[in-house]
Amino acid sequence: MSENYIDTLIPLKTRLEVTARDQVIDVWVVGLQVKMASRMLSLIRSNFPEDRSNLQHLRRFAKFKELPESVRTLYSKASNKDQQVQDLKSSNPSKLLKNPQNEHSTTTLSLTKYSNGAVSNSSHKFPLVDEQHLLLVVCPIDLISQESLVVMLSSVDATRSPIIFPTSVPLLAPTSSAQAKKWTESHWPTIYKKNNPFGPHPSIVSRAQAEIAPEVNKWMELAWRLARESSESNRGEFIGVVVVERKNGTGKVISTAGDARWLDWAGYRVGKGNPAAHAVMRAIAKVAVIVRHRDLEKRERSKTSYDSLQHQQYMSTLEQSRSITPLGPGFSLDKEEYNRNTQVTETVGEQDTDLLKSFSNENSCIFYENHVSETESQFDDPFANEIGYLCQDLEIYCTHEPCVMCSMAMVHSRFRRVVFEVRMPHTGGLTADGMLGYGLFWRKELNWTMLAWQRHNPTLATTPPNAEAATNRLEDPDLEA
Image 1 (cartoon, helix red, strand yellow):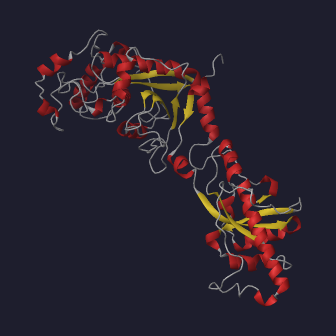
Image 2 (cartoon, rainbow, N blue to C red; image 1 turned 135 degrees about the horizontal axis):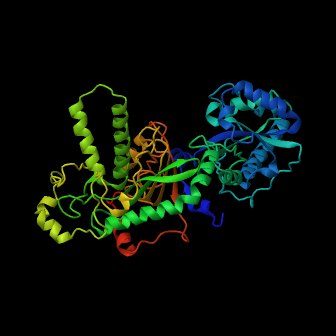
Image 3 (spheres, rainbow, N blue to C red; image 1 turned 60 degrees about the vertical axis):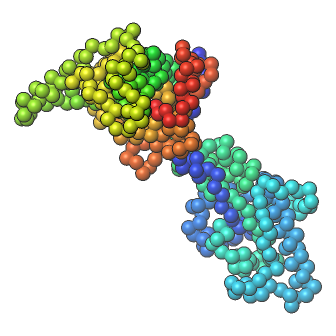
């Protein structure tokens, strides 16, 4: 590739990836000699058979030199405490631990306050640990008390009390090698197994990204062109959408839509406009027209019995909606004239109902599935998505992160992939690390999941002609894409 296209796409994090990535759990760690490792691990597995699966992302055994400084400091403290106990045993056997099986007994091996990352080794002298010693993650501390654990592990080596201390480790598996490295340096040696239990598998994301990356700039430029036409004509906001069908690795545009929320609305920027005329909703409606039209044609060819009069009326409506003459490229709505003709007052603008006036074209619907610009009229494929359900396996490219309503419409329409360029922190429904945090592109409780990316590359980013005005408008926290 002449340009590093893949760098323009940033895969979105799922909601689980965002919420679970920093969770930790407190576990018991024991120091032991290498020759005791096998017996100790067998003992732990027999006592905590269900726990091992929860810690598979951790290296169960670790050498002292492989641990972060905070864990080594905790081990040093525990070793010093253990040495004090050993000295006490040899000098005065009558002061040994009380019965460790009694959960109400006390122990001379008192817990120390522990923290990962904040403790310096300047005031602690590390014990001498050679290559014959290992540290082993035993289990979460809520599964067993320290007193009981001492008794259990002492059965392996009765010559001395085991060195046990608590520390914090990542609760869940890492979703990238970088995350595993970070946790290894801050908590405990962590393994990245090249999978993602909280989202799409990394290999699936990388393959899909490599497939769409060479064409993404072309589709985004078209989406920005549609956005510009909508804004300059005052039909809608500076938002555009392109729907692509991919066959044999090559994409083809089958539907385009610019925002049209102010078209036939009772006043320019009165209220929030027609939500059904958001660019995403219009693009989906256009695909629905294609599928609906084709299904009726198939029924006609198969001579299925149905109400012929109703069918003729329906076909007439579809034909007219698909053949409406698009508004010319120079068409625009004068804001003052538009408001005057619709007799909009400030009082009416504050109302939440009856903002939609009667449509001037009886064949129109609230989604405006007909073409309203010259660019939209250039892309209309009657043979698109012949085998899918509505938008199944299609790709959608958006200038802006779709709102919650549009994001859910994309899920229910079963898009395969989505790419957007501008985040909408106050209203966007796709991102999981934004203010809303919905992450609707990948929620297992919904009936569909998609792959999602944000396009970002300053050297390739499209700059709209009226960038200043568009930017000012996008700062409105109530604006929905």
